[in-house]
Amino acid sequence: MAKSTTQTRPRLPSLDLLKGFEAAARHLSFTRAAEELFLTQSALSRQMQALEEQLGLPLFERRHRQLLLTDAGQVLHATAKNVLDEITQAVATIRRDQASRPLTVSTNQPFASLWLIPRLSHFRERQPDTDVYISADNHIVDLERERIDLAVRYCGEAAAPPGALRLFGERLMPVCSPALTVDRARPLKRPEDLAHHVLLHIDDERGRFPWLNWSAWLAAIGVDHLTPAGSLRFNHFDQVIQAAIDGQGVALGREPLVDQLVRQRKLIAPFPDRYATPRAYYIVRATHAALRPEAQAFSDWLTEEARADIVESEAASQRRPAKRTR
Image (tube, rainbow, N blue to C red; front, side, top):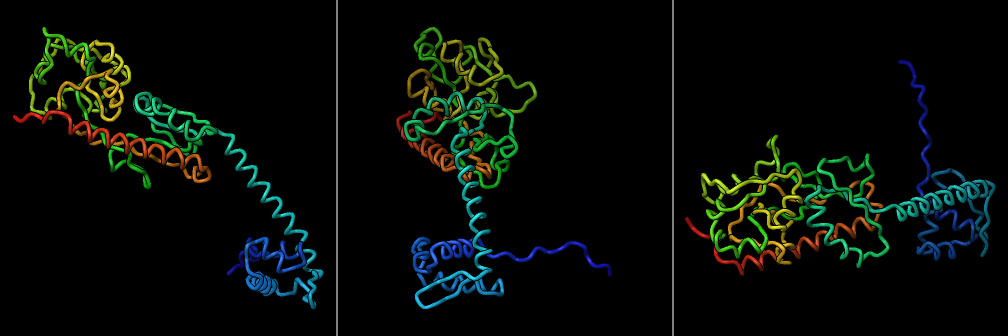
């Protein structure tokens, strides 16, 4: 057989051994080097013996109360010092670049406009030195290729990437302006009363979100053949909600995206009926985000905000009248 022309690189000493050697060579003292590296003198001495055994020649002349470098030790010290200095500078540059780059968070438009952005001031209070860039797009992006640190994905459990952290699920409920609930000519006491109102829809001609339409909610609570007074359609969910706030009709709200608007009384949920969808919101972290403590801080903050929302929602459900039975 022909011999391979590929040459195997010689095995190099570990970085820990080189750090220990550089410190010992610089101080010419195992004791002072060990103190610098937070090691015991005996542990550092064993490391240097291991390094010399790997190289097959002595690096130090061990005299009584004196430590000197051999010729080989002097050669290795000069190189090791340069290499460690370059690594230190490279790490400092990486950290400086990371610190100066905004934390980039990708998510869809409804989550960004209705849930995330109204809460961002809470994160700013906690991390005032962290700049945040929100990239709101309804398309799923490649975090590594686009250099995005975190994403909040809206998807089914099976579609969530490995390692994704679930924030919360989603439930649908009708919501409207408080002004509509006091119109005696068009009451909103039970779901059948929706026939007297304009229903606000998210446009979904391609059928991508069948669980977000009125027919799915009505079927889930057992109401069939309801014909509304009219319909308005929008291509973004935040437009649907704004139309509801303005009193233009009744929207199918998504918990917890609209929970804060309900707590602020900008919207009213006139019925207790809720319909859980098969989707949820998940935090996804890019690989490079592990180098950024602020990415972990943002992820922790999202989790805390979501937990607070769940607690508030459960408390509100205790205050709501019981769901009707058919």
